[in-house]
Length: 231
Image (cartoon, rainbow, N blue to C red; front, top):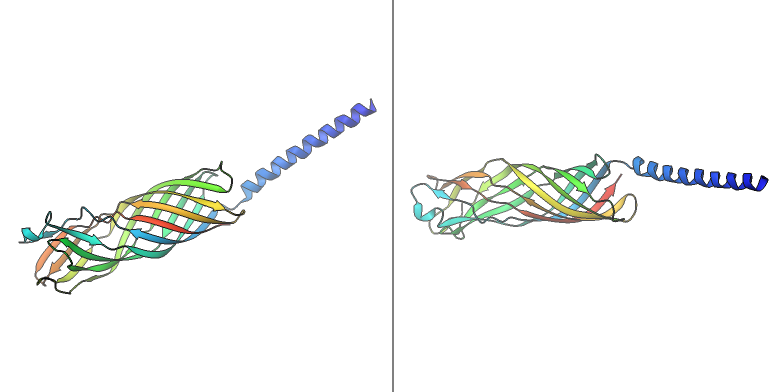
């Protein structure tokens, strides 16, 4: 009888220890901060095909005979994530990018100007959590792009020079796929690819008198790599 009682006590103790271990593990997961930050280097690669140019009184210089070409950019970026659940997070992306704009087709090599873009973007993400340290995710969201520091090219090409340039702020969509690889509870590395739909309208003036308008199809691919820190 005593042996049975001792065996029963040992089984009960083992069950309690197991239960305590599972509870501690759950508490560990739940106690992890929902906040996360990343610092990345980004390559911003506009896909400017499809941009339109309407030169008043100049159909030979207008679309489909001409378009815009928007230069690539490499910039730093910071994003902040908040985990609503273990799998669902919201991510806010903050960064600015400079771009040069030139003409193509009938306006080839015309220096149209340059502008800085501030595209704060909010994404809803789904994080896959069944792969250990490898943590892939997908996201979808919206951006509101603000254009600032705009300046016209001025440099004449074939008798044409852009003397005024204004791009209009716009709302666009964004999709995302990426992963974090976590070395421990806090630190990891990140790789991320986004596609923005970004198509602002613009107005310009050539030679101080000729109005030009159209849509700049920027639609950049944004490829980033950096460091992750989970609080």
